[in-house]
Amino acid sequence: MNVLIDGRPLVGHRTGIGVHTAEIARRLPDPPLIASHAEIADRSGLERCTFRVDPMPLGVLWQQLALPRIDADVLWGPHGTLPVAWKKRSVVTLHDFTSITMPHRHRAQTILSFNLFIGRSLELASRIACVSRAVADEAMRGFGVDAAKLELVPNGVDDFFTPGGEEENYVLFTGTLEPRKGIDDLLAVWRSLPRPRPRLVLCGDAGWKTKVANDDGIERTGYVPRERLRALYRGAKAFVYPSHYEGFGIPPLEAMACGAPVIATRTGAIPEFAGDAALLVPPGDRNALRDALTRVLRDAALRRDLRARGPERARRFGWEPSARTMAELLRCA
View (cartoon, rainbow, N blue to C red):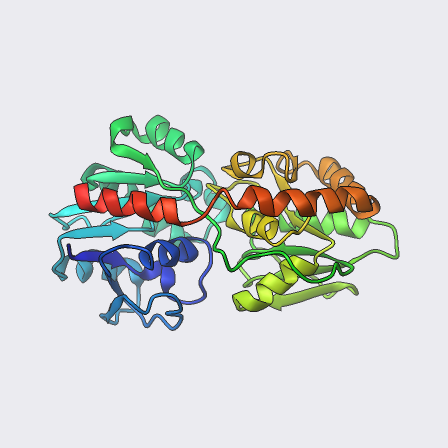
């Protein structure tokens, strides 16, 4: 079976949807062709795959004009949309609908490339994969998608992320620095802590509409390779993920796998995978976030308990079952 993958999520640094795409692609039984509009520099774990680049300045134009001309038995659109000219079998993966429900939290380019094509793509797709039950419910409620067309293909955590190392005195966030991730909530809560307070480490690419002042005690690492990311997870006194909305939320799961005491918002799939191995607070509730962070920082016994529960819980969410489900969807699409 010749599987073609829309490789746009793999262009640039591998985050979110890019992680999902790579982890599934590397585990498919039939090595796929990954096509894109620009070079994919990070091909780690994808050595079995083949690559094709048809250079074009805008990814969405490449998707609609160049991608349909590539021959394959089945197309996987991991970013949720398809070329409207595609006539063969296809599977799309839905991660969230925030460009529709929260347009003020996205760039115009993202809104146009997703919102213009999502409705038609859901009609065209042979099968639709959803990373969480919450996303599946939104697809049925918002677009009238038949439940029989949907399948859960959740994110997971790779065996690379394991506990180890010593606890250090910092609070960690990982993810793109953008409004949807609740960075302003985290900054406000951290600045309200009494001194001396742990330093705040913000790990991830700069997004948009989020400016972080060069306060004493705040470290911005930018994007880091996963070896450094694992070390940061392992050493964190607390990992805080105050996102306002997630379809799934990979960073809290990775942090749990590495034994970090996790505080996250009750959104997307986070309650499903976190269970009692993390402290969960309502999105946007700064008082609840501050209470949870203060509790974790002051209570060494609680941190030890969360460090023990996290890896045990995270082991239930590997990538292999999701890759098997995706392979079956592609085969039967």
